[in-house]
Amino acid sequence: SQQGEEDPQALSIQEGENATMNCSYKTSINNLQWYRQNSGRGLVHLILIRSNEREKHSGRLRVTLDTSKKSSSLLITASRAADTASYFCATETSGSRLTFGEGTQLTVNP
Amino acid sequence: DAGVIQSPRHEVTEMGQEVTLRCKPISGHDYLFWYRQTMMRGLELLIYFNNNVPIDDSGMPEDRFSAKMPNASFSTLKIQPSEPRDSAVYFCASSHGTGGRETQYFGPGTRLLVL
Image (cartoon, rainbow over the protein chains, first blue to last red):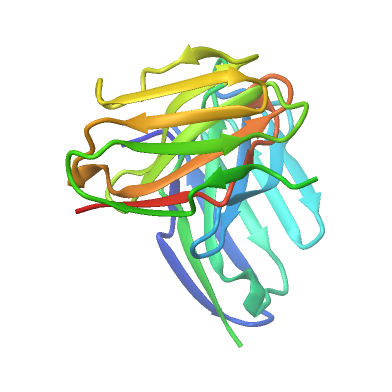
């Protein structure tokens, strides 16, 4: 398995509901980032959480990090149809490399 | 700011042809990354540069792939000769500061199809 695996692979919810995506990784990290990719587009950075942080908020996004369990979660509250996209976690272990997970495909139905 | 610019956006070529992908990073960014995205393998880092110098090319799949960064505002990824299995979306990204510890800004990608 590669560093940074998202769960679930696909998630379908109704507008207004909350969406939770999880990411697990294998080795110690310096930070973990979440990115969003709309279909046919490049990745867009959402939020970065450092290894000494446990929770971070940005608008409707909430990210948690549990280094003891080597896992992170991304919560999108009050989802909108425009949130439909693939969401990737990326881990930085050393140097400048980011290793991306396989992504969670989120569909928000209007 | 225009963001990371990639060209071409789409490329269709025949097996054996040379393909050159181009990237202009965000001005002032000192890290540049080339990624490849496929359904089978996900998003893979191919190579990255710091201050125009290649730092880690361990992700470059074969000698058919080469990348250059002649100056701070331009980089190329070349495939010669191209093969059908090279079909993928190739992304360029740039960042300021220690690359993996800061936000990476992605270009729109080049969708490559090798027939």
